[in-house]
Amino acid sequence: MKTSRSGRLVDMTYYLLERPRTLVSLSYFSDRYDSAKSSISEDLTILKKTFEERGIGLLETISGAAGGARFTPYMLREEADEFISSMTNAIDDDTRVLPGGYVYLSDLLGDPRMLNHIGRLIATQYLREPIDAVMTAATKGVPVAQAVANELNVPFVIVRDDTKVTEGPTMSVNYVTGQSQRLEKLELSRRSLPMGSRVLIVDDFMKAGGTIRGMASLVKEFEGQVVGTAVVAEGYAESRVIDKYTSLVRVDANQENGGVTVAPGNYATEIYIGNEPIGLRNV
Amino acid sequence: MKTSRSGRLVDMTYYLLERPRTLVSLSYFSDRYDSAKSSISEDLTILKKTFEERGIGLLETISGAAGGARFTPYMLREEADEFISSMTNAIDDDTRVLPGGYVYLSDLLGDPRMLNHIGRLIATQYLREPIDAVMTAATKGVPVAQAVANELNVPFVIVRDDTKVTEGPTMSVNYVTGQSQRLEKLELSRRSLPMGSRVLIVDDFMKAGGTIRGMASLVKEFEGQVVGTAVVAEGYAESRVIDKYTSLVRVDANQENGGVTVAPGNYATEIYIGNEPIGLRNV
Image 1 (cartoon, rainbow over the protein chains, first blue to last red):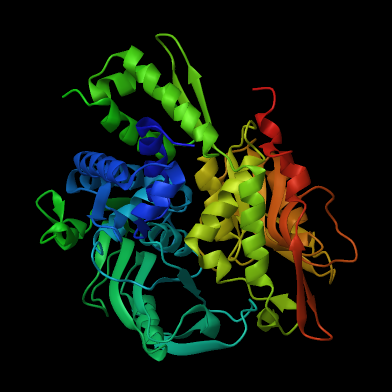
Image 2: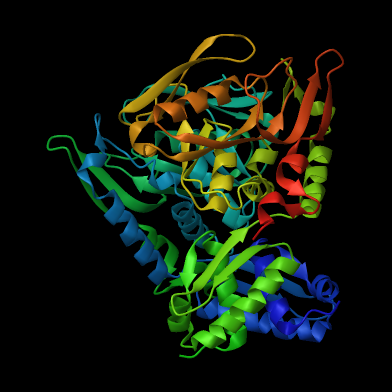
């Protein structure tokens, strides 16, 4: 049954939002709505314009018989700043400081709306970069990895520091923690990551960066390539063992007076030129 | 600037999909698009019809000056069966069987599209039920909890069996594992779950159900109520220590011949009447 333009616009929006970074052919939509490809093309022009105006994402359309549309979500700088400001406000609360200089963030990393924003913001940096998988360390990095992977529409893999969980054959590396210089082990199921993958490393929190360096050497064991590193919060560290990363916020717990200091991370300079994602240029 | 009907339909779809189970007022949309409330009402009628026809979800509209719209995602039985069939096909692979009768499922639980389907299907059972939080056990349950929480638009909380991770003050319970009858401990950060919450318990895998029973007693310590229990896969168990649960698939590893047997779980009878979610009746 032929679907009206109104019905098509609603369903196409739903359909494309559900499948980021996937090319959907004109023929598919044409069959789905029993409508001419020329009508579908007009629909896509409307979607593209609205997605752009509202800062929802990039809709690339490929014209011609073999054409189609691919939706890549992003977040404009303005929305990112607003989101980060709401996040720093939420974190700026001295009751979050735990013994040992830790800051309680689990409520934020257990809030789906917050995580969707985190995922969309981090994915914005890799708007035009092919990524095969997102990697993180158990347990607290998992929600962040899932949120980012959801926007990139790629699998996420979970690196562990214990062998309790049965995962089949694993590959493992030893690494030195950044600050306390302890020797630790990280391992990943052989089956979970194809050799030679392009990997984005994410985590909830980074101090000196030891765990992230450990994950990077694990990627190397899988003969893969680290495309980038992003963390939700970076903490205070006298020195870091990794040099390039993106952070959304900076959080320091002051152990002397039990207070917390929070500020935006480096995301603005890493992800944006003006209000636009760096990757949006030269489209 | 006044937004055209086409632009409104696209953006309203996006806006509502991003905020499941949230009442958005007519006034908000009217301001956002600089359009009359009567036009917004007509838009909502189009969205409602398309959401229903395409099995996207329920759009409840409240008319009048204080009116608005609330979107609740669901999955129809037909789509659920198709999804579960693709899932059982993916699991039906003898190379997944690991020593000890475990079945490797981490690739499926690290696939965002698969997780979104799992989340939407499990949430469908609680279409009209108020839920305050989703609870799971670290680490493998986390992606499932996040996916379900995302559809329900509520926080998820992660119960742990170790104290390594700093979470601040915790509440803990001891429980007896279902099969090996070992005594274990589960704990949850005090701060992460308000007392008296209505909790949906989810997990990736259940055998006898010991961990789930442990989580249920933790909910009790928080003076809360278990609204339901859902697992992605149930394994073989001679007897179970919990009586009511929803499962998406049944997976048995045959340790003698190293094969795997997989079948649909009990979701069909727990969630549906005919093609429709049970909760959709008597709207």
